[in-house]
Structures are given as C-alpha cells and as structure tokens.
Length: 320
Image (cartoon, rainbow, N blue to C red; front, side):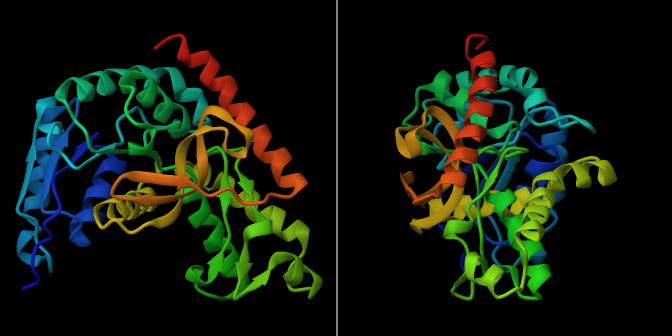
C-alpha cells in the first residue's frame, strides 16, 4: 500500500456540487490525509463525509480522517481552506448577476475564518470568483499572496480542449490561455500561445486555422458554462479538478504557473482588482504574477475585462 501523504488539514466550506467534485478529485489523487467539511446545512456535510468514508478500502492512497463540522475553530490549524459556498448560477444568469447574494455569504465566512486564527492558504471558487475573492481579502485583510481565486484555470482548460479537438491532439499539447474575468469578458492571449512550438500567427499563415475560427473557439470556451448549465443545471467536475491542481501546487511547493485569480496592484497597469493572470503557485500561495508582453489588441481587451470587474466591485465594496 502506498504511504499516506503527510500534508496537513484541508477544510472545505461549501458542500454543493463544486465542493463535492473537489473532494472526490482530491481524495482519489491522495491530495491530503485529513479533511473537514463545513456547510450551512450540516446534514449535507455529514452525509458527504459518511459517503466519502466508504471509499477508503478502494483508494490507492487512503486518507486518515474526514469529518463534518459547524465550528470555524476547525479552520485554525488548516493548511488550506477551499471555499465553494454560495448559491448556484441560474439558467440565463451571468456570474456577475449573482454577486450581491454571494458577497453577503462570503463576508460571513471570511469574518468567521479570520476569528479562528487561520494562517494558511485560501483557495476560492465561489462565483463570481473574481469579486468574491476580493471580498474575502478586504474582510480578512490577509496577506494577498495567501488568497488564490480559481481565476481562469477552468476557462483556459476549455480553450485548450477545444483547440485540441480542432487539431486532433491532446489538450496537454496545447499551450493557450484565457486571462481576465472568469466569465464573458475573458481574453485569449494568442501572443503567448502555441502548439508544438508553433505560435498561432504561424499556424494561421500556414492555413491550418483562420482567425475567425479561433475567435469562434474562444466564444465557445467563454460560453461553455452556460451550455453545461442549460443541459444539467450546473458545472462541477472541471472546476473540482482544477481546485485540486491549485491545492497540490501549494501542498507540494511546486512553483507551478497557473492561471489563477490574484489581487493586482500595478501588474498589467491594474490596481485593486482580482482577476485571472499567470502566477507562480507555491507553499506560500502565489509567489509572483508573470507579466506577459501583450499586444495592443490583448491589452485593450484585458483592460476592458478589468473595467467590467471594477464596475461590479464598485457596486459591492461599499455594501460589505
């Protein structure tokens, strides 16, 4: 039997579909050996803990404990807190349209976590994630490097998959990225993207794809959440995997570059806004933001995405 990991406790706050998908992914990958589940509806947390305990005999890397709790003091000695709590996105609703409801939920969670004395890394996926990560930062006043939004990790994954399907290659062979809002105004950064070492200007010049086709792929990636929500009511599996990837980069001190949500204070000429950017993830949270040299079109679109977020943030910040 493989040895259990020695990583410290992970607390999940929010045991809905996203939270459960993260847990299932984390447990199957042997991410940690101690989990605490918290939810406004404690029976849901307890039921999920019992259900997940039934996996123990079949796991290659079993965890040692998993329990439900309604006591925020359980956060104090956690290494990572993952927050997925909030009401789900309704059909036809944008992520930003649910902002006020979920900002109130996030404020309450943030206040209780701060009171617990927690000093670890927080990973947030509650939507709209860019705004709610900023809410959490303002309420807790935690070190900004220790607060990570899920950013455009999932958006980027969708873009890579769709491009991979076009070229009949593995998504792992596609290096393409979406920056900015986790949502409708995200920006494809073609100037830093490639397949097998070829940039997209070269690929277009070779006639293997057109700019119009690339734009259509970006639109499909941006709208994928709505497609899934219309078909099954919510999205969960993809983000569950990418929350696990972020958490693993922290726990294993990987110094891995991921498209996560960070508080910008001058990077890309933006201030006091959380949005998806490439950043190095380690045991300390995000170490530093990588500033790519964007072309004029990308700068213009990224600035526009940040303005969308700033407008929403301005509507929220005085109410928390």
